[in-house]
Length: 355
Image: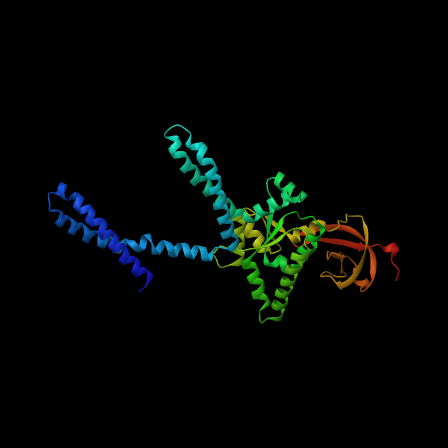
């Protein structure tokens, strides 16, 4: 016999008894014999109990079980801690509140208990990790945590797949410029693993590099790196999940994916683009300055030569075709800014060249 069928039988018997008692009590008002009203109401109670018992026992229990099973362990444990703390706080407030004049003394202890318990459960379930970091940092006298507490809480940044595979985030985190917790959603980690298992050699190598970078990031980053289980279950695309999760958590996304950058900005999500940071840090040469360039290839136009600075910035040298595979001093004439960064135009410094 299944549990649901047993609960239906138990509910049917319980409601049959309640119906019979109600029928006997109402026999006088209905001007009918107690036996007749008791039988009629007991049959009605049996039918009602048979139908509604699963809706008040089995189905809610199944729903609670499913929620608990799917809930991250961290959220579940912190929710229980919040409930215990809320109940303890409510117990301490119950006696002083009960001394208030009627009806407040009778109503407020229960109302405050419900509100305080709900608030503590919500806070600990949603921000349990941050609460632990804050308490631990203040307990051990961590100045970074203390500053974060004084400024209203520690910041967080979501990392996407491309920025992990790119690898520059590891160097940036080592410098100490980042003061925010780096969050890696579980679905991003799963995508990295999927790429690492790809049949394509290039994709497989990129995925393995991403997993290696993430491992080094957890070991050597000067800011915390945390894997989170938060997910947007109704969405399948990883980029869309990332944008919606960032919007839900109120945190920026770090990426070097141009399309993700545009989509996130259109939905009001802050974006930290590694490529834009890299371009901003490149040295700027003004028109009239001289620099040394190694000519490595011909340009598109006649007699043009092309070289690159150490940071990868392209330099187009007018008349530089004649100096292929040579390092020559060039005079910057102008520069333009493109989506990929700056591009300089220059010409050889004639007086300093030796053939």
